[in-house]
Image (cartoon, rainbow, N blue to C red):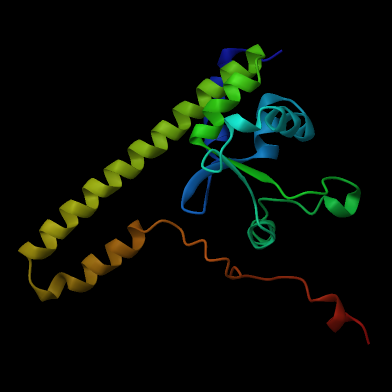
Length: 182
């Protein structure tokens, strides 16, 4: 049995499940199921039984394009071929995760929800400090002349959130099957 200390020690593992999708911080259903120590289908069944508690801004199902992109980033495995999941994943926003606490009532779910909410709050604080840094950068840029323009532009690019425009990542990929034949 896991204790509060186990979950607190896994704060970094909780935070690593939070991803950016549709300009939102979300956690995918199978990651939540893993944290709650329940089967993904059980979690989704509980949510469907309480569908009125999960409007689109609390939870949404991934599009095929989003799922393919996440699969290419190794966020989602190709488990369908092995007899696993046959439907697209669901993504839960911070509000959706909070609402899960009213649907999943185990002691583990309560402890995990507390940690998840703390992680979302911490990320929000980091993003707010990022806004403050952008404001300070603008003030400095106005203060100094053209020679630092390139430096300020480089800093701005580093501060931008990761792009999720579904483009193919840089790196090696296996050859498509049709090129391997013949």
